[in-house]
Amino acid sequence: MGSAEDTGAAGTTISGYPHPGDQPVHAVLDRHGVVKRRGRRRNRATGTSLSTSDQPNDLWCADYKGEFMLADRRYCYPLTITDFASRYLIACEAMQSTREAYAFTVFENVFKEFGLPNAIRTDNGVPFASPNALFNLSKLSVWWLRTGIAIERIKPGNPQQNGRHQKINPSQVFACHLGRGRTSSTVLFECAARPRCYRNRPARR
Image (cartoon, rainbow, N blue to C red; front, side, top):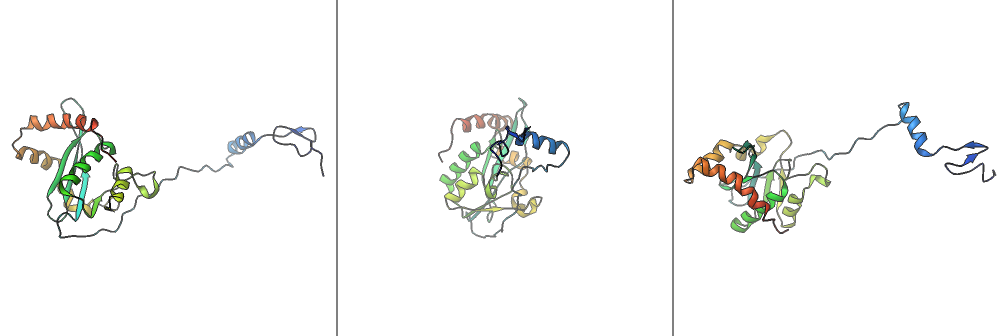
């Protein structure tokens, strides 16, 4: 068996020669292209099985219907929720962003008014899904699961799987507000004012 000097740890000497540490060795190997770098793993979004229903309040569909710029150069993101069977527009709320903190309050309010559906169908975007989380579950989708709501997700790049909801475009959303007796200036004012309201009223989770 060798002496303690022969079997020294990193940074000590072996037979009179300095023993390099792990970092210098890694740097040399990396410089010569021997080290294989691992990219950050991301959970690839996939769709789930999709159901059909002819019963109202059984399956809901949710999505953000694009974005548009307001007069003060801020963007408005209309969050829409519809009933799959009746195609009833349950909610159409002007949001400041697609952050889940704002979406919580909208869904909490519609749950109080309409009750809980059996399932909610969305795409794989934020805040309905999270690309870096286990099974792409976001805080919002986890909250749905805890309340007993099943999650349905369409396959990426297949908006036709949520076709009934996709037929609602931003111009129809705008017209819906106008049809309730409000002027275009009132709608734009609400788009600018409501996000501040939601920001000051966080949902209880």
